[in-house]
Amino acid sequence: MEFLLVVYEADRDVVIEGVTAGLTNHLITLAPGTYTIALAPPPDFLPVLQQVVVTDTSPLEPAEVLFA
Image 1: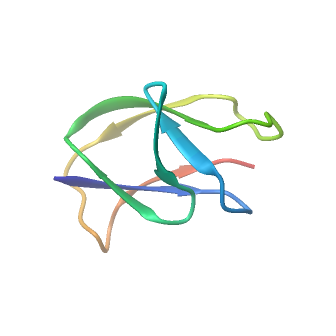
Image 2: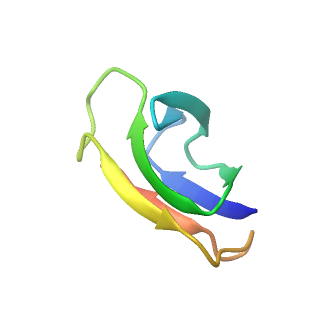
């Protein structure tokens, strides 16, 4: 099990591979792998999509994705 933290200024749904998978600023658990990450609309953030490799993480050291 791997851990991902998607950081954004507000709580927003996190979309992983086209499926809502959790909320920003909260840990998300998933299997190891490469994922395309986005936020739910409205598209008022950058970048629009990010690809991240999630491996060798822990709850204290999750993979982090930042949206602005």
